[in-house]
Image 1 (tube, rainbow, N blue to C red):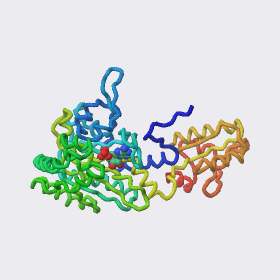
Image 2: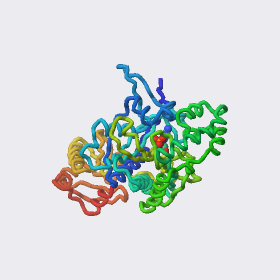
Image 3: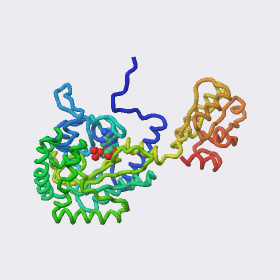
Length: 433
Ligand code: AMP
């Protein structure tokens, strides 16, 4: 009986796996350039963590969580996002004590949401993200926005757009919430069940409704921008002005952007890549400022700002719009031994080369020279080293450049000696990873 993968999940293998590694390495690289340190938190957390952080009025908590009781009767949830776990870790490990603020952490890992699978939407997907906690400033918000922008630019996307809005401060939100309640009260009877719930818990969420009729009503709702307090407006303007300084030059202000997580306050944004050549999979990532999140889950009163980029969406768009050739991670050596003695020498070569940091493949079954060379070429190695009894007796081995067929002779000690002793051209090709 064949067992199928769980709906909404996918395997990442072969060429695609190399592509994901490239996207992840680049993300880590950029985060480290901004002095972020990697953090890994558990995939399993107490359900309460997400209820208190992501929020009871969010679709994620209401409909999309993988929640279950473990054998000890604890309610656990497969994390639907990573920010809450990072905050939990900052609180439980007191990472803020004696530390230079802001704390800066980045992460990469799987998240789980029980959503309807469709283009760009999975039930298990992966996110790269960053969180900067403590010492809030318009500069830090702008820097955070720029990190995601720089990452996407570094992947050679030509049309990265930052869509941005401000949810304002406490004062803004109280006034706006009242205005929304008043506006929607005349329509709510005939709106969807989700909107009825949102009306009670967080009317802001109604603006995010995907039901076409409700969406029409939401279009004419009061605009958040009309309710921004002077402080909030001034702060938002400061962030917008700073973005240019941080190298973000494609910005669109969208007053209807609210994002799907309840903890955001202040500036929120999304990254979009537009192109006619690709299916619209929605935002590639997004982020925002959060004032009370850490406090809400029992930590100190420190504000934060963060972003998350969906790797499945980034990968789809990158492989459709940017990728021109296969990701090149060639094997350095394929060792071709003919016979038992040759295999013994081959293993010594392989061991020594691996110790020196090179990648090596060596077959352990008996093969003819013809079939060895065929395997060498299939392995996509840069060089083959050919070993037979004659080569051993004469201490004269053949190293073959598989890109052009050029052969050079080498000695046993050229490989197993303290240093690799090969001509400069070969060393250069090897080091050009
Ligand atoms: P969020 O955590 O909701 O702010 O989402 C951040 C990013 O994660 C989105 O812009 C998507 O790229 C990605 N994402 C969120 N949900 C999914 C999903 N169900 N499948 C694939 N990617 C997702």
